[in-house]
Length: 495
Image (tube, rainbow, N blue to C red; front, side, top):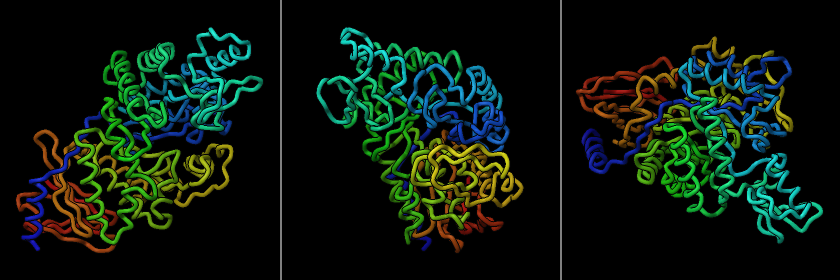
């Protein structure tokens, strides 16, 4: 067995698969402000509420926050923006936003905003002015160039009442007309928006919504638009971080990376049928996941990966993992996700095992701080379920999912090679996976046991030492000479 392992390790060393990351933050935390923390007693989460929870967010080990849209909007989700340079009054004021940004930075936390540039809301002054122009037959109005209008129907066309005109809306029924990103006037507006948030307010970047819908079905065009957006952003505020939502396959995501945008969410690894869940459900989970990683690192070498398990548009991870009564599985899945490398994203509530699927509001339930300190549920919720104890209860339990997530986040921060290092797959069998992470002159070995019930052993270089570990029980990895034993669902960090 020892000879086989060493030969396999040599083979992988000869044909390595690399991935790297170079971001400032390791552990990002997605927040739906409405459902997070209410500071004024009206039942709706707000920016001051997020600020009030920064100590908890920092304690959990998160060093970056992504806020879902906070700009003026008539909807509960706020992706139908009506003013890009305001704060929706439900969430507070621009002074609240400035105070939150300053407080985040004082806590060593970066903050990025959700920026929907594919569309506005129908209530945006640009769109209202364009509609008025069409209805009054003022076809020279400059705002007609801000959107896609036509006098004959087309795919995703919405008729304009009282006229023979149509406008494009990729997200049908949402009151979100698509912007014309070929318009120089629109780009003038975009530059103004970017400068306002980056320079005047001081946010650290953006999450770019629906980038595959800038021009649906035309990846090359979308990449060109993102390339321009990155250029504009660098000219305004060099170093601003952008992560894009390209909900597509790995090969297409690779094309989007050529735009220069810092990162794109790693959708193939997420959700119930993503690589991670499929691997942990497999009979040979470690080797299955190693195969996925090989493909990942071949298709996306030397980029900043952005892995996640779930977000506001997907079923929550606990449901995807079938882990309502298996906290150990939820813990291990988060561990495996971090070992992929890059800058990982955690959706609020995942750290305490919140559940939700089906209609979008069900995926955006009130954060379960305790039985008394919760926001109202979003409108349209059809099922409210909390499978795990509250944040406050879990904070008192050192064996809880919450404490595990905290230890995991701190582990990644203590060992930056995990997120930023180049990754080599050294060895895998049915249940054991060995990864090498190298960053500059520092090199570590990660040994993961995918078995839920049995310790696993393998042979490693006798000069290595166990420097850190993370396990679901009190049992710890043991290194005896060159024989390493890793407990069930455990991780050993060797150097």
